[in-house]
Image 1 (cartoon, one colour):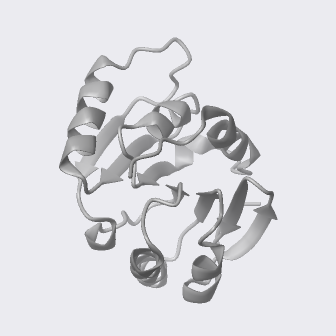
Image 2 (image 1 turned 120 degrees about the vertical axis):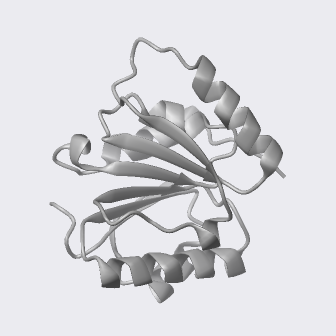
Length: 165
């Protein structure tokens, strides 16, 4: 069932992200749906934004929305949609902000977190992870070396050891 993120909650989490310079980071919205979080994130000067979505209809809608997206607050030069299963997606070896809005069941989240952990082990780098409405937080803490940086009722933010503070 597709439920888009609430703009106020997503914005609050993005505003709380303690990165020094978003231009050093690629934001990846895992389970990006039609792209709402990508467009909210585009209000920040991230290097680029990537939405990863496995459902064909949602991915196609995101691509159409990217083509139509024009907003005066846009500060990110590059937004792209990738049609892939999250557990098959290869995370780029660059500083990342990962955004999750409980996009899939716990078993898939565990597989994705194992992929994040492997990627971080192979390419140590700054990674920040935002989990909006953190029902799956125990999986992140049990599968990765990411540490909890900030916790609110609406979101958790995690950081790799290399994340700037």
